[in-house]
Length: 401
Ligand code: HEC
Ligand code: HEC
Image (cartoon, rainbow, N blue to C red; front, side, top):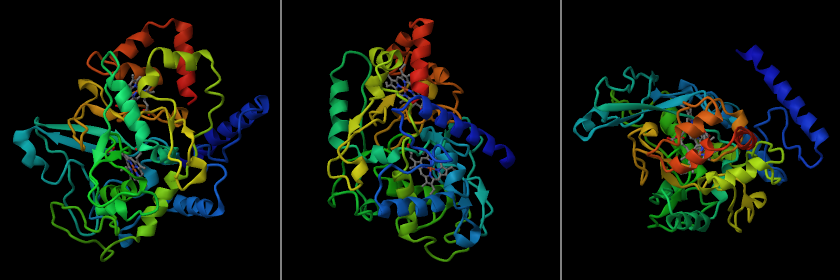
């Protein structure tokens, strides 16, 4: 209910102001909405893109603007409210090989119809189909992920391969395609490249934010753009909607991507001051996957993100997290049990944890991703062996990231 929402925000602002007064070293990064702040020290051109992109991200699309024929939600913000996780989600389906025909319209459910369509894509009632849920992940700080140098991701992949124990991260690979190249500002791909490193999406299946935004417009809202000009196949065979032809211009896609690209990491009060929690995070091995910093490209076009140690707490690699977290879905090199190490960013602003939001607390999330068949099994055992004080210190550290 909207009348409720201003209250927590006011409380959050007071809290931040209180921290800043007690603790002079804490930079004040946030405005009224603690998660909707642009990266500090952007030049005026990027600031203008952030503001214009914010409006695209919040915009509710209507049939007359090209919504449909089938859709999941009507705005980016419906699944990334306050740039954090959820509340909207996407339902995924996976079929055993003999039942592949049941998913002839793809592995994503699209429950709502518009523009003359009348048949949604819903999970078939068949035991051979696995149905799972993906909550929209947080989008703040994702510009840092995009700026990470490929060489850094590959370095960590090599280092993990040499470790004793189960941890073996793998970079996802994305084939070059023309749609990605239309974002000529950020990438120096040559036609024929097939080895782009995927870093966005829960299985790291997408290489750039512009490509992700174009896919989200099409997949979640059936809004076509020059980057994704054709409506997705659907049971009614509808090939266009109430807005004839391509629905939005490429710049709308780039603006939505720029907004995400320029969102600051939520404020972190002194997470790296050598306190017990930070040390334990390293010692018991959380940091093997949730790598505290990776270095960004020196030639990155956003000066504030270029040539820095980006504190993203992820290796951007895929890990086998065991059968209980599996969804049966493959995405590029990512198999049914594999997930990208979740970047630990702004956790206190999330509504629930893990890809489907099944964990209500950080401790639940750790236990759920540390089953005996998960690459995190040994680390989770070490977590369970901590005494109460150490466990509290570790959880307090993670919660503040
Ligand atoms: C119906 C809910 C929904 C809507 C609407 C939606 N998203 Fe998402 N978003 C998701 C889900 C679920 C994922 C994870 C996708 C996956 O891995 O399959 C995601 C992932 C992302 C990511 C990658 C984040 C990461 O950590 O890698 C970005 C960026 C993003 N969305 C941006 C957008 C933009 C921009 C729009 C509007 C054009 C949008 N989303 C609309 C649900 C949604
Ligand atoms: C083998 C690599 C690996 C190790 C070790 C590991 N994690 Fe994770 N972590 C992941 C992956 C992959 C995910 C995403 C799983 C999913 O969404 O289903 C994740 C998710 C999380 C989440 C949920 C974040 C969110 O946005 O929902 C938290 C919290 C977390 N890890 C904390 C920890 C802590 C604390 C430790 C150490 C006790 C740890 N992890 C050890 C790989 C790892």
